[in-house]
Length: 407
Image 1 (cartoon, helix red, strand yellow):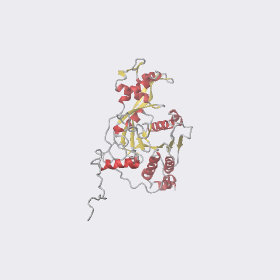
Image 2 (spheres, helix red, strand yellow; image 1 turned 120 degrees about the vertical axis):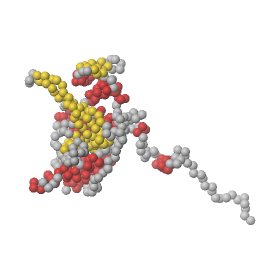
Image 3 (tube, one colour; image 1 turned 90 degrees about the horizontal axis):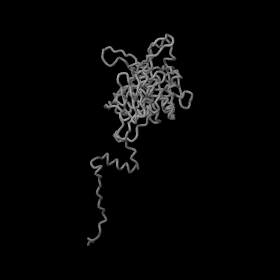
Image 4 (tube, rainbow, N blue to C red; image 1 turned 135 degrees about the vertical axis):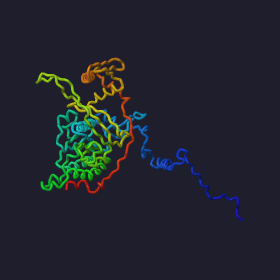
């Protein structure tokens, strides 16, 4: 007869305990397990902009306007998504001649070098003016920080960029993406050149090369800027845009995380005496530039635009930007031609007739611009708009290797 008092050796299955936090969500339940397995929570990306404690890795552009245009309004912790040129990304900078594209690129190069970084500037146009670059702060005499490359062909410049990105150079600038001459055109016979389309060939080479450069720059954190001139396009229908396209083909439109258009909207002049004619004449001192983000994948700023000021021979004028923001929020008083600012503690007062004189007096007043900047800081930032995805209609651009371009 069997012993009915013998304890059963069969284990009672434990009930599965489900946290009220993860109940009903396999994503959260799996996440809890992975947190314990990986012993960290850093593997998860935080998509809530209001919870950001640190901005995306970036390079300051040297322009207060551009930094805030890209970065957007800071969240509740005072953190903007990306207040500058994002690392490991590509930006297409385009506009007509004289809109400040090269000035912005050189200013960014100067800021990068000043912060201890390195820059390779690939100049197919051979039009970089050394004294102007130096005036903007570019260390043109220090080859360990700044290197100006002027390759003969488009392919050679691309190989230079790929090598620089692979070695972790902080910033690479292409000036301009449509000026590089394909090797086939440079070495071809004159009677054969008529059968080759330079624009199409240029775009095809970028289509094959740009994703390779982007892939390596994402690993090393290299920021890439491609300057594009606007060229007229044939419009047979009478509809569709302003009749101009940025050089470089569709590859630059698709692979860029940022596409920024610059347009000169006003030339600023002052009255000065011409010593040769002994007459009072107008002298150009700067320009107002409209900056528009046609594409932005680092913040919700797509479609927004701001005004940037450029000073003749001096570069980007943040002083003027600070003054204009101050006027917009009535921190700086403007009535007619008279402009006045008083510091919060009343220790400083600047009142002048005319913007040029007011700007100069503010610069001469010790600490005035720093105080005014701190006053306008809470107001900086732009409204947000939804980011629309772009679809690629490119053929597979990964065929072939970068090194094959030199063959």
